[in-house]
Length: 105
Picture 1 (cartoon, rainbow, N blue to C red):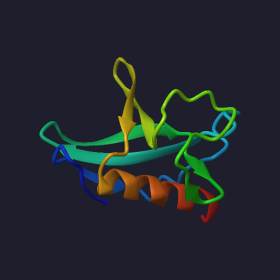
Picture 2 (cartoon, rainbow, N blue to C red):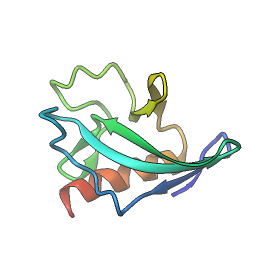
Picture 3 (tube, helix red, strand yellow):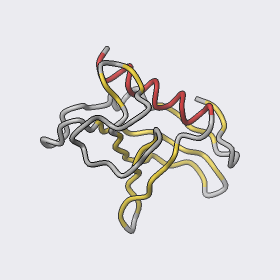
Picture 4 (cartoon, rainbow, N blue to C red):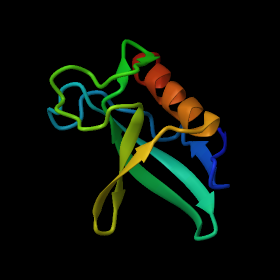
């Protein structure tokens, strides 16, 4: 997908298609992506509330109670979840791809 402002490489993992109906979490899209940075290469589970009808939204889907005010996602970490703001072209392109793929498999 490209390189983030921090110099990390992001990859959309098409072998793991996004899912809009994850355990009854209406309005949320789950997906898996990969990141390569100084810590190495790893797959990351993530959730976003910024996808609707194949498009990336500028605000979360209504009813999700997401506290993010700008497009991004929540990544699963060893200690819980971390919020990631899509503030680079690479991260925005990743979200656009996820949103498109979940509605156009």
